[in-house]
Length: 199
Ligand code: HEC
Ligand code: HEC
Image (cartoon, rainbow, N blue to C red; front, top):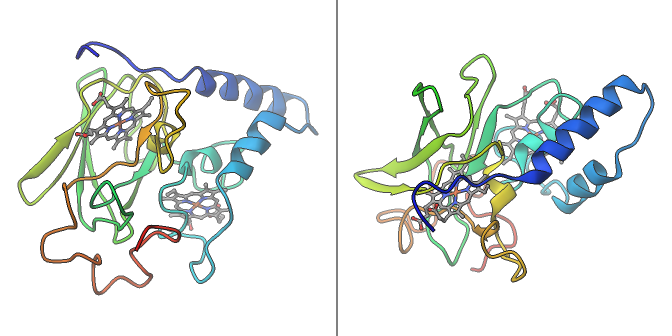
């Protein structure tokens, strides 16, 4: 893959078109949207709906106009885990973003690794470039993100073999557990380990 390859998600455009159709026709169900929401799985027991819920899932699927959480829309969101083999959130990782106009925005993960950008904070013009960093460790995505606002649209826990270029493993920052906090942030109000993560 060359550095100039822009990864686009055709699904995002389709979904946007369907959502517009749904807003126009007052009562309407969108089976593609419903299936995608269903595929995200359930709320985790013990974690209330809020910044710590649904780590690793496609946040913007729900947090967008017409979505289940349309009152709190995000322009971008995702989750950063420590290492490739388990899903323990990295607290305070910087997400450094640059959009097509060259404007920059930096946000930080919370202790389950979740981050999100609200429209009043930044409305990027796609494609965007992204780098994740903490304590002098950095990882950049080489290709720009074409137009998909959910990192987890492509970065999934189980990579399906049929689609090796569009689906990749979850985002992680270190090669192994986070140095100094292998089980995540000790003061996290919820378990920093994603439910279902290997031990
Ligand atoms: C299946 C749908 C769904 C997914 C996926 C989802 N959320 Fe939510 N989220 C909700 C709902 C519903 C609420 C509660 C209603 C609301 O705040 O609009 C909520 C509430 C929140 C809130 C509190 C908002 C507020 O203003 O009080 C935050 C923050 C949040 N979610 C972050 C996330 C993050 C980060 C992700 C991804 C890692 C995510 N959500 C994934 C549906 C979802
Ligand atoms: C449209 C699909 C897609 C989306 C959306 C996406 N990524 Fe990626 N990401 C990839 C692919 C494919 C790679 C591997 C090739 C590359 O680096 O370009 C990758 C690589 C990465 C890497 C480098 C991994 C390594 O091993 O060094 C990081 C970090 C990353 N992505 C972070 C993110 C973040 C953060 C988001 C959300 C803001 C995001 N990605 C959204 C497809 C995507």
